[in-house]
Image 1 (cartoon, rainbow, N blue to C red):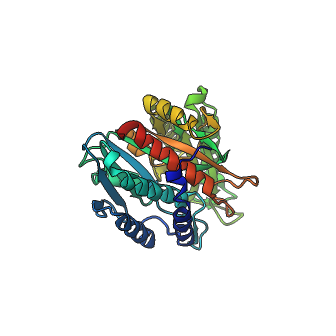
Image 2: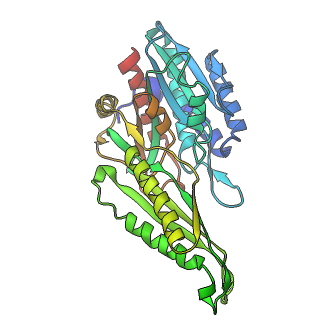
Image 3: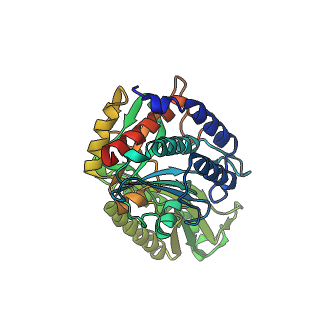
Length: 376
């Protein structure tokens, strides 16, 4: 791990920022304390161009150097994970570390403002865990005034060991389109099923069809995950219910394939139900696209990463999803994985997941080196 003194000297403040953010987790669109803390920290550093009117609790701090172009955007998510039905929240995905990294970069940049030959946007985004805060910020002009030329984000990642960076071009995080299906039939006495339209039978047939669809023969770059994760219907042994409910998962690395499978899924669900005398409706809860890293920027990050860590994982990707994908649909850039796995492994969203100081140092150095690559 090769960390410059200008980065390592910030470790005491990193620990303070990380401690505050860890101890004050807030869910999406309710990151009030978080947003206030970040804004105050930026003001303390000397930032004056701070936009808090872009979307909900989001913040964009802009720093212009000697020239206005090019403009590079760095993004951190802000929200914590909702852990259970009680509404309890905790930073078990690493967003506290992401914010700490971006605040550390902010300090380094303002310390070196006279060396910057372009513009940097530091974007703190609310509501990543499920409702697409990125899409809303883009719709409200996050990539304009000035126009963003490249965008980068880091995700600390539990599947990679500390002192490891994962970067590749193409699909690195899957799209996610979770869905709900409602099956309508004709309920009645279970002893006379011929007088009914059996929603349970229709639901089971749909589930079998989806299981068969999941075996789509595609290459590894176009991998698809598709399946039913919940079925609910009926309460009695002798009643055929009027309705049945299914929930499912659908993820893909290829956005074009995603739309193709999605259309096939909708048509097949409705057709099966109609052929069996019933009706079915399918609703997609969200529609994050796949996160697609651009080729040139990924190659640049690969070389930058080799200057910082011992191991660069050049083929890592995950079926997990990220709404940073919306930024990469608009401008070239990359989502970069910084390993945070310690001796005892806990996955993202696990109760015991935490991030140490090493990934924060690496992430800050990585962002700083990107600035040096493109703007210094």
